[in-house]
Image 1 (cartoon, rainbow, N blue to C red):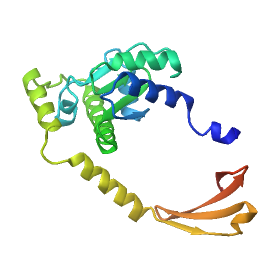
Image 2: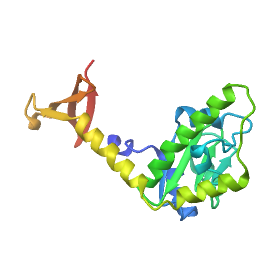
Image 3: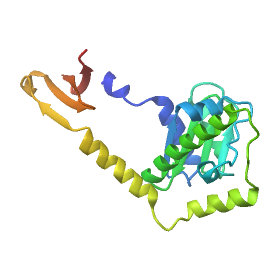
Length: 212
């Protein structure tokens, strides 16, 4: 089925699959082209300097892949995996951010806070004032303390986000035609708006169409 073969981005398969193979410590991988992380990746020196707690969390734990060579097909994916080495996360120059974790909650938590850290750092740079960068000892101590914190805040944070999405963005499904005809409609309540999504079934696969 052509549709099924096109569901998964082949570059995503290459990047994630190759890193899983070559970096066993990367149990769960998140990769995003988020606004602030991507802007940081475009700087000649994309080092995230330790200027607050969020930036300190990533101190000496982020590899920089500085050899962007195009989309993440096989050759590019191998170079990315080799660049990660034994680091936990990686900033992809001219591309975006990649975080890893032992669990989905860990990986997502690092992704979220890296974006916040990049936002703080870039905002600080925009003031054109000298940055108050903490010492290596303080930054490393803070990163270690965060990594070994006794409470699993990543798990709690992820659970809270999941609950919020379930409770706030409720789904209401209404059939406007019999499912065996190959089409039905879903009404989604989203931020006080009702979005109508038409679901069609073609050759055994369902496709969603947002009605304008």
